Length: 370
Figure 1 (tube, helix red, strand yellow):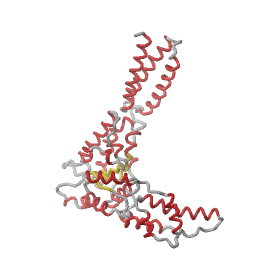
Figure 2 (cartoon, rainbow, N blue to C red):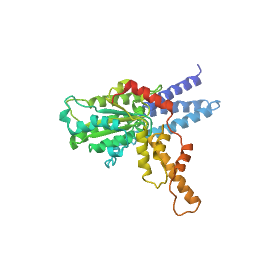
Figure 3 (cartoon, rainbow, N blue to C red):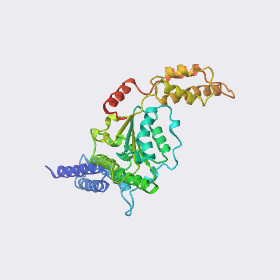
Figure 4 (cartoon, rainbow, N blue to C red):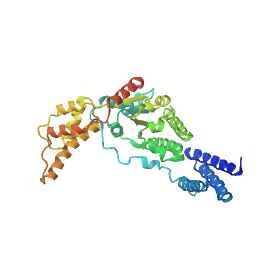
C-alpha cells in the first residue's frame, strides 16, 4: 500500500470513530477524532498537491471543521452546564391545567381507569396496602384527547404537571439525554417529597423514547435503560413518592415488551362512538350560530372521524359562511346550515383509516391492561 493510501485509510478510521462518538453523544471524543482526521488530510494536501483527490480532501476538512463548531456548542463552558442541557424547571407547567374531567367529552372508561390508578390512591393512600400503578400508557389513534385527559388528571388531584416531548429528549439533549432522564425523575421525587403533592410526568410520543428501531446507537440504548431504572425506582416500597408517569403514543407496537410491563395500566383511547360524536358536535356547535342543522344526522355521517376531525368539520363549516360574508361584502355572517356541513364533509375525510383502527384493536387485544 502506498503512503498516500495509508494516510487516506488513517483519515477514514479517524472519521469513522468521530461519527460513532458523535452519534453516541460523546462530543469531546468526536471533536478529537475529527481533529485527527483533519490533521491527516492536511498532510495529504501538503504531500500530494497534484492529487486528483485534492478537492475531496479540502471538502472533507471543511465539513469536519463545521461539525466541530457545532459540537463545541454542546460542550460545558467553564465547568458549567452544557448549552444543550434542558433545564428541568422549564418543563414544569407553571399554571395549573385548566381542563378537568368534565371538559373531556366521552372517554368514560378512560376516566374511570385513571381514577382507579391515580385519583383514588392519591386521595386515600391508606386504602392501598399493595400499592398502586405508577405507570399509565395511553394509546390510540391521534386526535382523540390523550394529552387533554392527562392534563385533566393533573387538575383532578391538584398535582404538579411536567410535560416532556420524548422526541426532544432524544434529539435535542444530545449526550445529556441519559443524565436528563435521571434529573427529570429526581426533580419529580424532590417536589413530591418537599411539597407533599403528587407529580405527573407526562411524556408525549413515548415510542420515540422507548421504541426499538432497526438502527440505533449506544446512547439511545442507555437512555432507555435509564428510563427503565427510574420507572422501577418509583415502585420502591421504602419511599412512598406520589410520582406518576403517563406516556402517550400513537404507535404502541413500537414499544418493547419489557417496557410495557412498567406501565401497569394500558388504556386504549378509542375513536369516538356515536354518542361521543354527538356530544362533541353539540359542544363545538354551541359556539356558532346555526339554522336547521340535524346534529344526530351529522353524528352518523362522521363515523370514523376522530375528535379532532369533528372539531375541524365544525370549524370548516363556520369558515365557509365567514368567507361568504367577506366575498359578498356583508356586515354579518348568515347562520351555518346543514348544507354547509355536507359540503365540508365532501372534502374533509377522516384522518385515520380503517386499517389503522384494526391495527390498534389487534394490539389492544394482545396487551390491554385497563
